[in-house]
Length: 288
Image 1 (cartoon, rainbow, N blue to C red):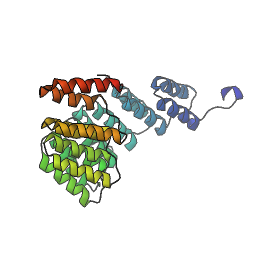
Image 2: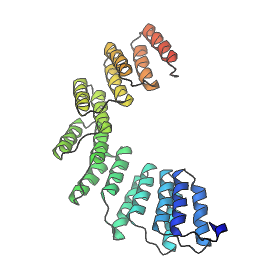
Image 3: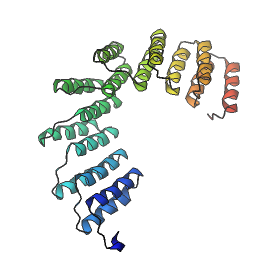
Image 4: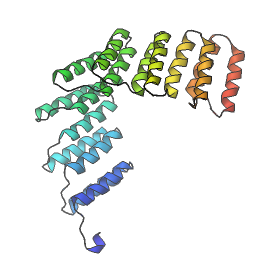
């Protein structure tokens, strides 16, 4: 463009920044930002938000925070998109105390957190295993009139099972249904995994049946959860039946599938079956 005597404008630069960030070329995208400023073309909120989001996705939060500082120096006020990206990046790094501080900073700057903001914070607490804090944010969310969605409930159901709070997990499933929300594959898998780890295999199978009624086919992760449940209680024949079923339905067993059954065989002292399954695994190209 320069060689044709046409100076790029902010929109042109933003397209280039977005393309570079989309390919993971953050350093090159920063170079474009510097070029913009050197050419007297002021970056706008879209420019900075694109870069901030890219750095946060890569869990390079320090770089994202420096960009927010540059944004302020350029006379631009970070908006909701900016804050949501930064909160997400901090949550990914597990720094939940810092994530909450940035979340609260939104309100001080006159910005009202939205569903994305709350889901990010709830999800961050859930991934960190902080079930109490996650429920507290969930309560705050509903009090503020922000309607929770399937993402919110899925995160909470998963952490409640992880915390051993089966009753609360089931109550959340019930509330989700009362709100007219349809469980997705991730929700069903969290439910099935939770039931299996608690030994409630009949409930897990009912969830699988409902999953199929919703025309959602169980994934390898879902099958692995079921197989693990059967292996935990020593029902090896049924675990092997599930292995055959997933293959028949076109779901390729992975190393977790085989390792779960192999470990159970070894624990039960059935080295013959373990050896046979190990041979089958290698023949199918699955490496331990």
